[in-house]
Length: 256
Image (cartoon, rainbow, N blue to C red; front, side, top):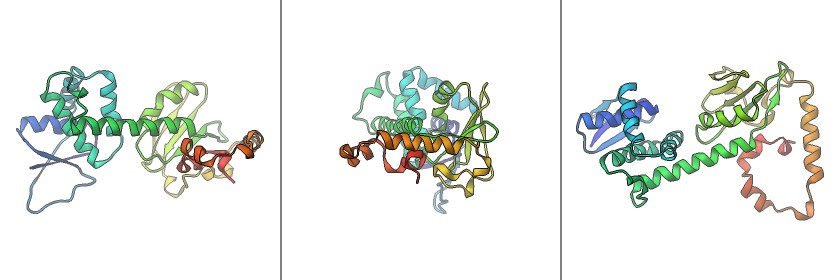
């Protein structure tokens, strides 16, 4: 079995597929540089990401797969799971090597794995859209930070750009140390230096940088939440099923 080491990008993974056919490798173990452990008994091939090669593979897939499946590949990649990188590599080879319609064969291990992982990432994206709570800063920018299991930031752009088109906002991923900034015109990727010391909880921003009315709005929301709550009909099992505890840190009504 050949070992291919790639840079962890989607372009790198697609380039690895291209190199696999070019080098006529039959069996490949795909590993990102982040997870690669050198083996003195086995030499690894280092994949150099190449946009042209990646586009050729992506274009070939687009001829056989519909837009939903192409998006599933992207979502699965955003899981950042080492096993999923291998699944995607094998799935892409399976699609290339077989006639159109092969993606409907859920009896194939890699078709099933990619489909299931895509659904997991999509659920995480959906929950981020539902549970993100912004805080207004003193300079009028609405800020929120997240700590998702998967790298879902690229999937959030369309939703928040459409929903908050008239507001400047920042959504920052503390785990991956990058964020999105919308300036009323376009969305750009940004990075901060201070996030290593910040907590994932909603109230991690210093009071000094918040708009003076922010605390009032948070208090009003908590009061509203308490007023509509009916203790006699409280069902924590159902509540946790729809709002898992790991998302409570984003909700102002859950903050003491």
